[in-house]
Image (cartoon, rainbow, N blue to C red; front, side):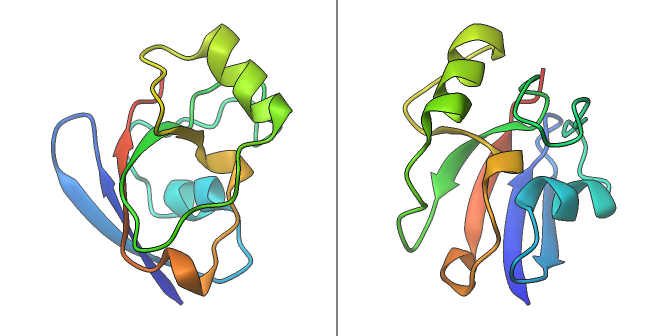
Length: 104
């Protein structure tokens, strides 16, 4: 299990445990993290799982072109540390990563 921390739009901090190999978005929605609506079900189309990576002990995998395109065209407040959680797979190296939920 990997610990992930989400700062919800209200400012409330929610710490969850996620199974290695799972999708970060699905782990967050299973624990009802506020602001991660996942309207497209993880198909990288809507940016309703948009988060900012606030803190990570290890670098996350590089963003692929589909994720970048979706963020550029649909996300509010896109920043250098923006990620779509539907495009991230939970790994042991992600333990303790902090995400600021942006959603849409």
